[in-house]
Each structure stands twice: as structure tokens, then as C-alpha cells.
Image 1 (cartoon, rainbow, N blue to C red):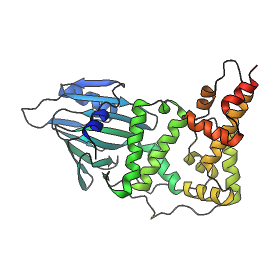
Image 2: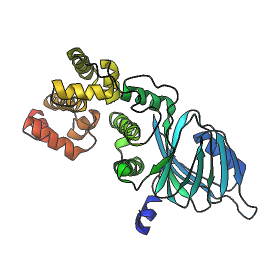
Image 3: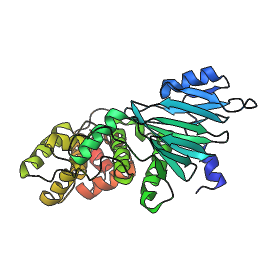
Image 4: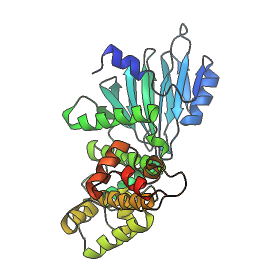
Length: 332
């Protein structure tokens, strides 16, 4: 799946974030517990010693990192309780036991650990991995929004993520992009943008991986013109906030699927496209009445546009001029 060069580059991700390094088992257990949860940690074999390295970027709903133990270790947390754990090996192997299922995880097979299931693992000496922590409350709320109904008990995933399969190819690309951007980019520093990335990750996991909350409970199909107006009013009054499609669906009183279906039927667009257009209008209004020191970049970022090239193209398509031209024309 990866060349030696790409693996080398991936091992540098998150290096700029706080680093923990230790050979002491008690210290390793304590520090790792601060990021994850309390657990038992045992080094396998007397001839081995730990050489643990961990980098971590904390987010609001989703956090990212990279780690290795430097020795074969058995880890038994019991249940994670408060979060879902996605593990994506860069090298080596991990043996995962989650609920009644077992997975041999390597660079071609990741894992997702559900917080309500008993979990233990063996991390081999040569193993190094990326991990993604997703807060349980946020994920289960996203699941309820996605299906338009409360979750029927804990959201439990089948633990294996086959990263080389045709059905998970798009998910793999999303995971790789988010890991790279969270490590090297600046988009996750923008709350409006980060919220959309967090939602995209959770929705992609729900839509791609097998779990116990799927279409056995189909999303609500009851829609009416009134819910479109509620969604539009919510967008208009809250476009300056880090809105997600799930937030809009909640305020409209329908599932995310029904929200998108209704927008296609009644507006021939999507709620996120409408939000984007409203934000474009807002940036134009600000650029047309600029304050001292106003810049296109600052205005675009304030309204959630993280990719300035795409923003400029969308702005020009909507208003038939570049944002810099608008600002220049109205600057005193």
C-alpha cells in the first residue's frame, strides 16, 4: 500500500505537536492514560524494554496522533467508555480483540474500537500507528442526526477497517488527508472549517463501515416545505458559527438524509451549498464596506473559507469579479 519513501514521510506527521518519550513502564502507562483511559500495560518478554514515543493533537470532537511503544506490549483497558478509537498502523502489526471479534491489524487493515465493548490488544515491537480519537457523545449525536432518530443503545462498529477494499477506498483517502492536514496544515485551526471536517469523518465512518445502527431503522422520510424555511432561517442567523449539516438538520427537525433530499426537491441545491453561498454574500458585504486593515484572506477565513484559491474561484463565479477587485474598489 505504501512505498518506503511514503512510509518515511508519514512517520514525521505530528512531529510538531507535544511529544512524550519514555522507557519507564509506569510513566508510559500514566501518560498514555491521560490521552486515552486507564489500562493495564505489560511488556511481553524479559529481554524487551519500552522506548515509547507519542505525539498528540487535541481537537474539540476529534483528536489525532501518532505513537509507538518500541516493545511488544499487552494492553487491557477493558472498555474505552468515553470515546471511539481508530488505529491505522504505519508498520508492524497489532492483534485486536474487541467484543466477540478479533482482528490482525497492519498497514492494510485498520481498526475502530467502540467504547461500549470490551477491548484488549497486543502491540508488536515493530508496530507504529496513527490514531484518531472521536468523542462518544459527539459520534452518537451524529449518528442520531444521520438517521433522524435516537440511537437504539450504544453505537457499535465491527472493528476491522479493510483499507485496501473497493468499498473503503474513499474512506481511506479521507483518513489520510485528515491526518496530513491535522499534522501539517492550518485548516484545523479554523473552528468553522474544523467542525465540517469532524462531521465529514463521522458521517463517512457511519456510511462506510458496518455497525449496529444502520438501515434497520431507516431515516425519517416525512418532509414538508416548512422544514426548508426553518433550515434557511437557521443558516441565515448562524452562518458565522461552525455549522454542520447535522446542526441544520436538528434545527429543521428532520434527519440529515431527509434534509438533503428536501433541498434537492425544493431548492435544487444542498444545505451546505446554500450555507456557502450565504457566506460568500457575507464576505462580499464586508469587502464592500472594509474596515481599516481589512484583507481578503482575513475576511475569507473568518467566514470559513480555508482554501483561498477555491474561495476566489467561487466568489468570481457568483459575483463576476475577484474578491480583491471588490476590496480595491471600496477601499478609501
